[in-house]
Image 1 (cartoon, rainbow, N blue to C red):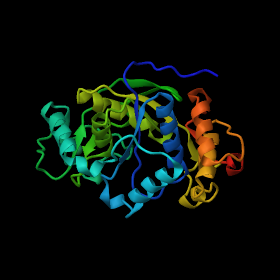
Image 2 (image 1 turned 135 degrees about the horizontal axis):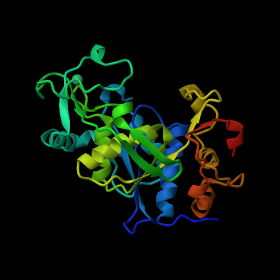
Image 3 (image 1 turned 135 degrees about the vertical axis):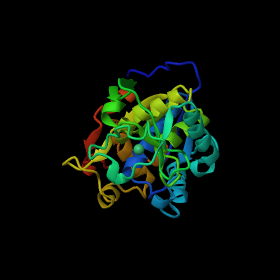
Image 4 (image 1 turned 180 degrees about the vertical axis):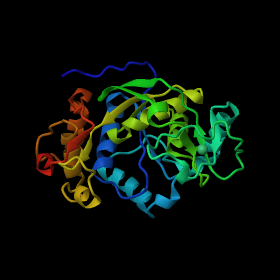
Length: 301
Ligand SMILES: [Zn+2]
């Protein structure tokens, strides 16, 4: 077996950062298990952050239920859980810094003024919009690729000017955008490697740019495959909660390990499964496809 070797001498800090928009489901369980085992394999710390900066989308009680499920599964964070909603001052300070540096600008465009392509054409860059005008704040992007090498998915590059345009860092409702808050809080928690689902692969270049503009060094990235329906569509809540019995942690953990390319022996209890996972975790086994059709039968415990 090829063992991962640390590339840096810095202490490893990983994290799991769910949004409290619903209960733990198979996709979030895979991200939790992957980030947890990777942190343990590196002799590092594993932190949990609740990304509760979008109150309109929040489901009451789901943060507590997610944290309860993590405990039931035997995944205990090495430190206090960080709630993003407590970080409003830090998010605002970062936005103020980007505005002061000239890297960000207020945008008063209404939805109907934005092109169907979704690529922001820079309309408000040169308009005399002030921060007190109702609207959003966008980060200025440049032409040219932002590239990184993902530890599982390999080389990934994106030209933000061509594909996204100047993007929102503060929403028109005054809330910090996900792309801004995630960077500020990963820096606060000292995260050295981000392990998460490949549905966020395309967010990574934007987040790397925010890191750079704030004078921070981006962490390393490891994106895990995401379960989809056989036709490639997103798993519905009903489907993703049905096939794997997440109420039995041994079943759920075995299914997550199998999904991540590992093959624990059948019939192990939860403690033995974790022992097996710690002994056999190998990044090289993780499938390097961003999506995998979900076949519950192959994941049975
Ligand atoms: Zn605008």
